Image (cartoon, rainbow, N blue to C red):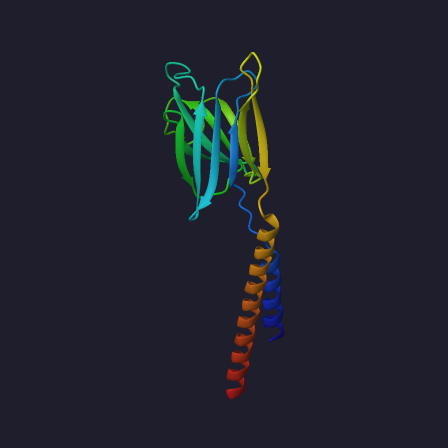
Length: 198
């Protein structure tokens, strides 16, 4: 009985202090080594048990050479070095679903777009960056009265109600914790009543 109570309170403490962290949710800026060409931007969002990855690329050459002319995007887990093929960039775009967490995306030039391991040269790479949910910026463009056509941009920032969000989140956690404690009490009382009736 004491072990069950300790286990329940340990579970409650774990649930109340744990926070969800999705390592692969974020953005990726894939850039070439110094002197290289091309750029790719990717975003990854966790939806329905999968990471939905959208990639858009700019300034990639149509064909690097006569045989190696396929751009393939790969995901990698930096801690283990595990790599996985996401797909070929077609018309500068790629959409893929990944069922495992990853830290880095990179692009290789391949002869065959269906290779299982990267064989060709790695031309672009980038690691995950957190999504910036910072303040919204509303820009107002006003012309400057001069002889040449200069434009002044005035930025107005509006802050998000982060305090309200944290209060609502805390209130939700408190309600959830109270519900879990109520369930534990009902379960213990039910167990004791059954034991007493035997």
